[in-house]
Image 1 (cartoon, rainbow, N blue to C red):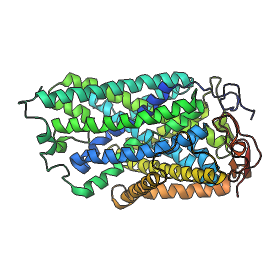
Image 2 (cartoon, rainbow, N blue to C red):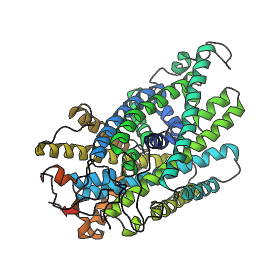
Image 3 (cartoon, rainbow, N blue to C red):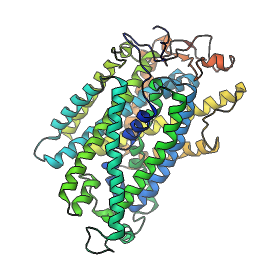
Image 4 (cartoon, one colour):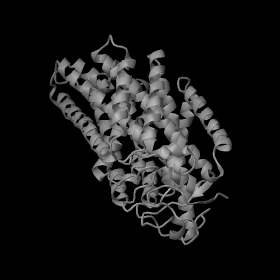
Length: 505
């Protein structure tokens, strides 16, 4: 590979990635990834598991995700590279950790995208119940495959408008729902909606503490994909400014959207009447006797699903590009179009989604719950590695006598440690619950398969620690005055590729 280009984009085979994503793009791409089927579809199952106490579960889960994102943001500001936390893990924990982290995230994006296309088929079934779901799924794969071959800037604009539609719908839902609760619009009497409806079917926690704990297997899945903020660092115009702004605003907005929206829904429709066969958003408007609004909202959730799939393809594609740069994936994954898009990884994702469509055709009733639980395992594992990598980076910086990071995670070291304990607890929940235990079995099998792949398929050059460029244009070995852990004297690539590596200890 060649050296860095003037615009700072990573050099691939046949092209160069371009830093064209603005703060607006990054913020709404993160919303597009995290505010999707987890809210519009998966939330119904979480509500049935925990009842109104699911609001507490979303608050706790959202707070944990915010700490994880701050840890990722601290690393992304220091090392704005295209492989993001996959390359960070390789740098600070070793190449095996980078290999498993990068491919597990890719696995996560694949299964999340399958869940999203499954939900898309459900939504289309609201309009066309006689058409097989797989027909709509194949159409979505072809459409989004084409969109992901466009430049990153166009992709960012598409995601901005996709996400804007979702945000507008959520805000309208909150405002309209609040009016119904306060003034009794569209209800038999002013007292027909409100806290009595929210708490009238067994109280705040009808299934007790165990119900709240069990709901985390679905709740945490809702936040999966927000790590795409770190992935965008390699193509952001100004990562030091863009990444902190996105991380500081998006998680708060997500918390407000999830908690306020679900609270309004459960104040109007009793939680035990919100079914899992359709979006709770559609359910509520149907209950209110406004069928036209239900159709409009179904169009919104279809947009949400397409947006989430789009972000999944983007995140997985850039991660595979970073893995190839480290020698952890076929070198062909570094092939870029003239517009700087890793086109081969788009083809890989389309093929993976096609397999998901086949599974959906064979198991249409059960696939979403299984896929969601598997995605939760992959999501949680990725978060564990982000937290461990961040801790390793902090230890190294302390040993090197480096100053405190400008964008530091709050409450260090106790808050990240508490978050890590919580995330590991979610893995325990997945293992204990019979309906999600299969996800742990598949997840552990996946990790064992990665260990074998690393041992027998990765070449020696892929078993070395990368020297990553820092935000000020130096490589981290120079920035730390040679005190980096496992670094040699190689030069990092300013665009985020990891050509210069040093042997792992």
